[in-house]
Length: 342
Image (cartoon, rainbow, N blue to C red; front, side):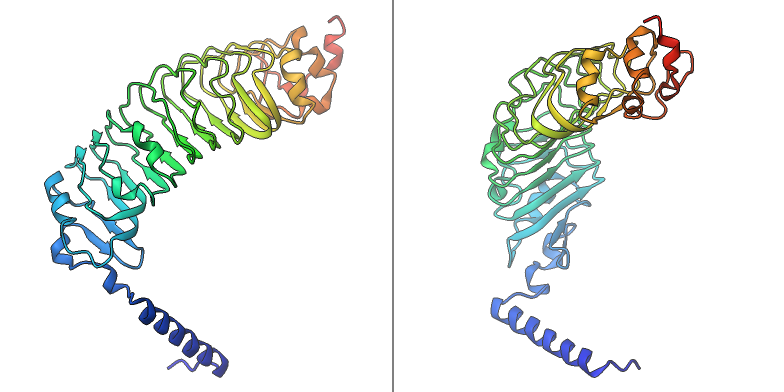
């Protein structure tokens, strides 16, 4: 038998009494938050996590039936449906009046989300994650109705047309690994709170200048694994801010002056592209601000175009250590004497 020190025992009694009084006052216990388990089967209510888990439902009808049960509490933290191979449509009214702050439906066969499937959560949901499904239809038009939504992740689906996104609250948008193909220049005109944008593997061939502008909080942009061949002027326009901009694993051969306008610190990733030169007018303004450049995996010729770098060891060490020339010389090992004729 463990004997507690008297002061810890007293504290334990006090805390237990406070919790009991609070629960009694609010009329809430873990058990009272959940409906009868048989009524919502095969969904499960996990009171300690304030979660409804419906990963085992066999059909859209069975999901709706579960939420027609008598719920003593209708406000939950999370809905989770993971690795389900039965749900293809999230239908309007499925969840009745139940509300959620976080919705995770992942690694399934979901193809469509109807506009009012989550209407009861318009004022509560702050995170929607529908990753690795087969979604072709998503009601982007209702995003303004989610008044607290900050995170939307639709990575790994089958969206084939780039949406025009409107939301005053969205800070985090992920649409990677969808066959989107083209990003219109008005895609983010009405997302003033956007901080992070991930568009990995979205089959993008270009970035229209100004598409990623007038976003005062933007800091993180990832466009890796696309088909980009150039980064034009105003690829990203920042508001004099720190940023992490990742364009690795594309086919970029040209970076224009002013491609990263307004960036004052952070990192630019252009690794594993087709860059042959490091033009001074493009990169010097970044290096003078001590912005780090990851440029490994490019066929850098390292001719007179890098003489300005070879003469400034501080600039050289702002490139990733494994950035090398096509002849195998590491950029950091360039000898200034080799460029006297430049």
